[in-house]
Image (cartoon, rainbow, N blue to C red):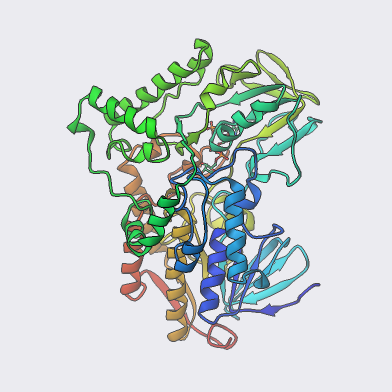
Length: 543
Ligand code: NA7
């Protein structure tokens, strides 16, 4: 059924982790909310990324989850420390059931236009189903890792075999049995899927542009007593999560590498390696991301591990990363390097042997032709900003976001954009987004947005947006923090280097929990840095 000019208080785009929480929170405020999502159900990232081996690859369960409901925490059982996509999706479906979210979500619906009407002080969205709706507030919960990156390689569209992108994995079963499979890309998705694919494929050709520092995921069943402990003390654990830099309940690591010599450091790394998991990257030394010397010792430790595992020295050489550890998204694996000891796996180093083209049945690199039946694109995303630019909303005077963001993703507090009044982003550029526990980050940003909306309503404000001066100052803050680290010095999706023509800078606010203190402070100052326009009839006050 097509709906025309439906009127709401808030329109939310996206029904993933962030959009689901946004709906729940806004409903609790008594607001009328409409959510749109292109998928057939909730889940966002976890709806789409269902490739073999897809798992949580950060500090895992039971802390990669919502924290807003104690009841939810008490009733949901996580089975493993690194939950797979199906377990996370089952959890999100349970959340949708429990809080009756679906009745306000329109699925299988893409928002193809979002434009601001200055006179009415309202956003209008139009969908690919011919619906349109308006609301004074628009929340873009469009996902930091959503816009799939399909590389533009000669002949790629002529390839006649099966072709899948990990971030758009089909819902029907995919069989690799007896097939020659090429996997392009060795980020988290490639490294998770390659060992799984190699188990049944006739042959796997791994096409690697950049080798990775990957640590053992050490996925294991979550012991009932661990879950029970988390439940018993959840209020206290949540307080630690709120205080911790990355949003997880770990004590901050106080150890600087200067305290230990090289051998002592390697001994500690060995101990952490044996334990495995994401905390390998966090629990060593607190200066790994800031000190070249500290970083070099850890990098060498990784390279030694790769040399130890991979039997063919030439393959091992190609797998050795040579940039600062942690400055690309750290990866966790389950037997990735061991996979290269299998007879049915070969590695092509694209830096030495680049792809020239695809044909109907092969990939041709400089050294020759590799016949394939299937191409898996594990090529990642136009991350952080890509899904906002795909939406490309039109703000004041019809200015498109693409125009405003041609040189940088200008914003204030990682949530709002000058010229785009009453539009909020969750996990957008300029926020801690992908470098923070994302469900918790969504809750915290949404809490701030909700308070802001209440503030505007109470004061009869119809339109609020940041000044360009406050955007400039925020940019300087984001850049200032990043420049204290080694992160901006590596080409990564964090710096936009994976997408041709994308502005190149480290766009994430690296201050972690410090960010939440900053935005609370801005609110306490009466929302400093914004300009406000009184409500006209039909705007916020007129709803
Ligand atoms: P990533 O981490 O962006 O990995 C993509 C991989 O694909 C990476 O190895 C890229 O090499 C490679 N790539 C991308 N484009 C090309 C082209 N054109 N040619 C060759 N190789 C290419 O995406 P993932 O999906 O693995 O992970 C995304 C996040 O999801 C992950 O960090 C977790 O947070 C969850 P590059 O390194 O750019 O040289």
